[in-house]
Image (cartoon, rainbow, N blue to C red; front, top):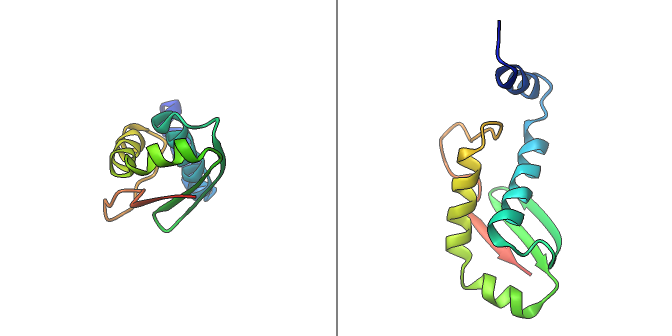
Length: 100
């Protein structure tokens, strides 16, 4: 007998869905940690860099000065997520935040 969380994680690995699923978890972490989901027009993630397009210049400036804290909190949020598949070398998922 296996637990449901174990079966889901195994299914995600076998079907090779982890990269797309991880991307969605990263976007959710951005929404939760930043609090700027209503101002976020577009998000893009590649090679450890999260690009976010913000509609308000005031909000973008406030977030710009909090980039390091936001990256740290998002990585903590992702580390606590059971279904997020971390890199094999143990490096953080998000290395840089770029605000446009």
